[in-house]
Length: 372
Image (cartoon, rainbow, N blue to C red; front, top):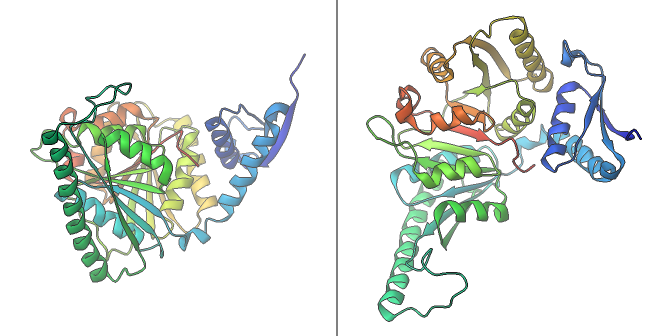
């Protein structure tokens, strides 16, 4: 017997794709009807259909999406929740400065600095066994914690001075110290805090052998929330009037959702978007049609934002990106994790010419299955 489908929304193609992506994130299958396969964005109204057993939950998600998209203009004044893991190094301090630079455009934002400290008992005691520490070990654990508390106090005082210097008196600055393994603890705590943005500092490039440590890489790859990776020597320009953002697309359906989240996160800034696709033999009719459709989505949804789209014919994606970055003034590189090979190469610069990292370019990573 044929399964009956019910229409939960009739939307332009780009919004229908966003809704389909949101449904898939909670494992609800959906079907798009009335799609023009040659020029999808030319469709007057795309029907999004689901089965009866998913109807109630799907309707709730569709209603929430309409509400969220309808509040895009209001998001200029909406405060953000920003989580910044710190280890008191120069690169984590610089990550905090970037977080301040973003938060300053969103009055009332909350900035939480979290420090994860390692103690001897972590990873050494089976969960099924109890253990009484000897006095020397107990004293060592206490000392590690006290040192972390003292370092965080000094760190917060210095950041508070920067807040006062910048005149950011309405930023809610808080700190948290937790024992644990860095990546696991950050990922787990993120689910409780539910940040709008997670900002991670990375070691400098140039002669350094590694751009990011293993813990930071795991957070970037596994986080359910947007992650901004900030190189140690990258400097946030508080006085700049307009910021240039490069968005690397692979014409994936998740692009529409990632773009929506990107624009919401940067709604407090004047930005210029460079949307590029790099691939071999990609200057043909189909590549241009796809890019034209993505550009129309930008123009229709965000008419006040300057958008420039380019298709770059290069079989090596990294080389194509590097070539583009050498000829354009870019402040931020943004991409989604469905481009896993690209992301993996970017966070292991020993595999590249390191041009991107020598330019100290921050990287904003969105995830195809991140929380709404």
